[in-house]
Length: 399
Image (cartoon, rainbow, N blue to C red; front, side, top):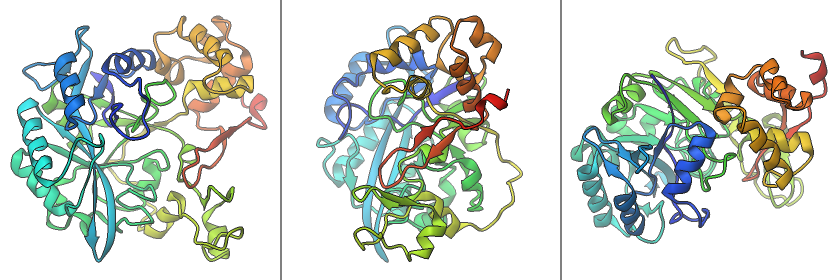
């Protein structure tokens, strides 16, 4: 069976997250979106751990379930900041097979520093040592470099990242089976790095709204929903990812948010990486960084297909010239979802005829199809700013 999963999320105990993030709201909006499996996020945080223990029950297969049987797995994100030749800073997503192992991971983290001040705590542990220590707890622990290309905390990020998996994880590299693409990159970009590693995609959500939860997801092909089968699918590359177009992400182009300036790699090279407005070095984005690290233009033999989608709220807001969270946008969104099983059913499967039969405006139906075909025009995001969708100039000629 195919399970749409979003396994990199956060709780309200992480910085810059919604105060209303709860297991109840995560389940509610996952069902609205069409996400069928979530990670808990932040499992080592003491207050959130009490909430997990109260609201979720673990079965014999390492799956945590709500009272209405919605599934989660133990997950968290850890920040490592340390010196290896220079200052390094990377984020890692961690999956745990069961409560017992989760307790051991939490105790290990407590021995290295505090876990109570942020759902994504920071430790000064070198990445190879961190992987070695966790693998000594259990080989079923999965460690995945998060949003691997983003400038500040991606494994390959321009600010403090590495040029290869081997450079980061040294003799522990063989324990890294997958990397997370992140919003500013997609598999086609990561193939150029020629790393022998699988690619997954998750939302890294800080709120539960439909334009956040599941915006990036991984469709796992498994026989039965067990933790071991989930890990097997990741390690054997038996999956398909749902990505946002890279230009939609916050760090695709180079630029300075405070200067309202961005540019593509070729312009960055022309201006020698210096902002023309403030004369300081630009924040180098993912597009440029991929060019720096490109080793091949060949598609890997085991490469999977993937979907490239922006959330439905974005399309409705564009159609109405309104904001994502406006009442007008919500009214249209709710009317669409009243006629379809969930948002992914609309984004991935509904035909234009299906949409028009449900009295969805034709221009909006066209945007939904263009979105599926990855033909929407975007102004790329940069230096922490999301990309923006432009109305397609020739959309009426594409049908």
